[in-house]
Amino acid sequence: MQLTTVFLALALLWPVGPPAPEILRGWRPPPGPYAAGHRGVDLAAPPGTPVLAPAAGTVTFAGPVGGRGVVTLTLTGTGTPPLRTTFSPVTPLTAPGTRVAAGTPVAEAAPGTHCAAPCLHWGLLRGDVYLDPLLLTARPRSRLLPLDG
Image (cartoon, rainbow, N blue to C red):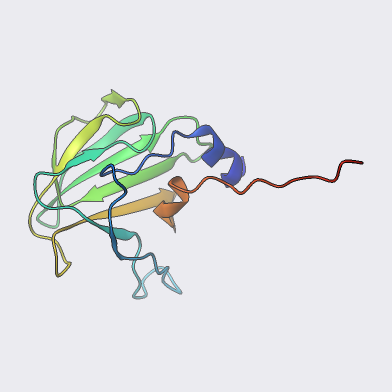
């Protein structure tokens, strides 16, 4: 299943907002699995901000990792292995195994970020490959075909 097809099938919501949050730091994939990089995006989100499911899925993890709260949402109908989106630092509002619709609050932003301003780190993975989570917010461009086909 191609990613473009997957993204067309998703609800494609921002995890905080509306309006769309300010992006404090963008995605910079590392050149290797253990190299430095930024494996997600940082969105402006003060503590207490509701964190919403950007698409329908199942909460597959909700708990601490390295002293920070993390929620992982496995997205419905996104192929094998399925897409997973992660949020940190958060206070989970849902337990693992909970199915949620797009727009459902799954957590609240928590203090203790790595940003200069309060933020939510948002990640996206397929298997062990990190992807740019902003792909979940962008609709593919339309392409007009010539009248004669």
